[in-house]
Image 1 (spheres, rainbow, N blue to C red):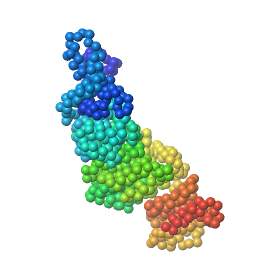
Image 2 (image 1 turned 180 degrees about the horizontal axis):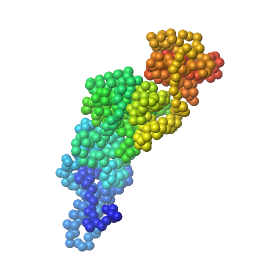
Image 3 (image 1 turned 60 degrees about the vertical axis):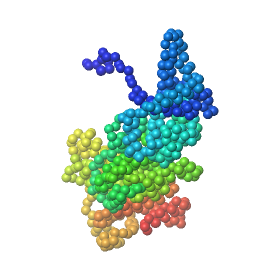
Image 4 (image 1 turned 45 degrees about the vertical axis):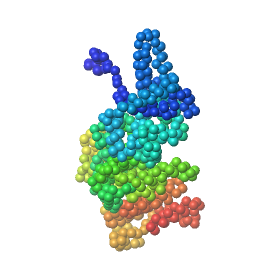
Length: 613
């Protein structure tokens, strides 16, 4: 057995590790010395707060190099004194006047040093400034904030001084440290600045935060800026995520043909004319093909599709405002590209609708809403926003989308095409795929996962793999609360109108509907007399999908929920251009004069209103 390398003999001694960040120490030294002189760290008090004298601040002495310099001076003076006091070096620095003078001298020495342009941070900040059009003040603020996060010794040197800094003082200090104009620093730290709008740097809202706690940088930013990157594209790739290629095409979405025409026209015009604020909303339950459709739209307009990340480099989820910051960062990075689209999935946590904020006048929530509204109005790259829960989004946001597409489980003909796309390996001459496609609530995602299970867990026998597909679909339907398929496969027989006992001429009715496919009909009679099958025959004769709803599917537990679901049912039928069948309709058609509750009246009113529309 071969021993692992770490257990084998090591003939060579381990070499001491070096800290590559020491190359940046001249800059950090200048900043610390300037802070010490500006804030009087050489005295005993700092603006009313007790603090460590900087001669006793070990981290301060290490970074500024004062400890080594003073030690060298002491060695020269006491070269012949074998009994020199080991504490003599720090004692030389405890005199305020002597220390201030030594700081000025050291500052003059450091002024001759500049950072090498090939250092990773120097190069990357320059690349990022080019990509995001950062001002010199924004670059300076970015570097200062990143060093506070990255260099623990630098941070500790400032923290040891217990220096509280208001926003005003912070602006003044950064202007003096970096040589930038005060108004430029204010602009760099304003909420509208690129640094804050993209979430690269955040500023503490506390009026009395310590200086080292004033900044909060994006979690992965220090490691990205201190790592070497070949060029701007390589650095940009750390922040952008290309959407993976999808397997569906426009042919798989014939039921959305009208919406596709509008969406493609909008996206083409936005890309060609560089229109700002082009936003498309795709909403509907999970698994109905929103993400696939977004990729299809991008392909239709010959654009590259990028995604806003939902997790950071550690795999931790990004939520709320941080995701909107990531969206803004992607927008600014892609702004110069002529053929880019941005996909923002699961946006409901960004657009959270909080009624309590309106009730109690939450000014922060109001300011956040205004910021989101501006984002929707000014984004330079066309964006596709996807959500599973549009009800949770404030109407003020919804009004700002240029176009919205509602997704529902696709009609049977489309389900058959998607089933053929995913399950073609197990298709045959029989109607196996057609029977799967009759499942009303089946979504493309369920078909895709069932096919994945059969590919990886199947035994290769077609019948056994088919059974595994059906088993996966049944388990998924149970999990999602969907209606299960009948235990026996239903094979329809021929339908003959002669066997109906009705008081109308059904062939004339069908002919009239074929000329003008609009009408509202009431089929009534005892159970089992063929009402539902007649509705199905009408849909087949009109070559339209059939949408069947039952009262039990529409009744909600909350006041107003049933009315919303009635309206959604009619919207769904209109979008699908389907024949709508409301079974058990008598539940909603009772005489309103006998109602005991207001919601009984409003349910009937909603149904009648939708029928007339």
